Length: 246
Image 1: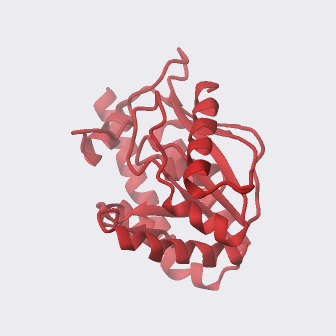
Image 2: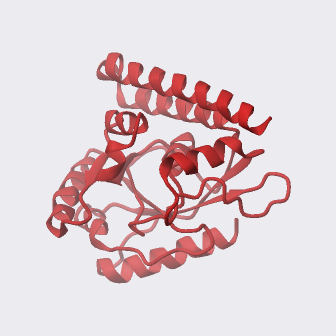
């Protein structure tokens, strides 16, 4: 029965992704930013429902920018979960743009891609992020640079924080967590870690009896004379505290 349910969810998810691609290609160009944000939020919430994922939001959601959101990274599901709560322009590793089906959707949504293996590419992305922040956009990054197990927050890379420092923009720490909706324990179904492939992680999520995604917002903060490395350490500690409270 689990396999049948998973297959049904998978079919519905594929149809929903294709619908999202059609909207991006046909309608996004004619929409204002506020309309795009609303559409992304609605689409993301519908996708979570299809996947059997419920959403719990803690703390204040900030609708307008300029704002740089920093969050821990657990799964391929993170972007959908965060967009269901607070649509943003994400910075993602270049590999995500080549994911089957999902990659086309991520590219179409205006994601900024970074080649993490190339140190110089970080500066290019910082400039793009700064441009978006000057335009009062919301930009979101995963400063760990890789996915974790949801139990601890890895050290934050500091480079991308330069965009917030250069533009004087606030940074919002956010913690993500996935829980079993019945027991309240950590759910490993959405994990995308180590040798786990994207397809395996998606299938594990589809086969689950349900996942509760929790998005825990902190308070926006400014650099206040901190350099980016000191700020990165403080933000990591802040996200860790938020994660422990989930």
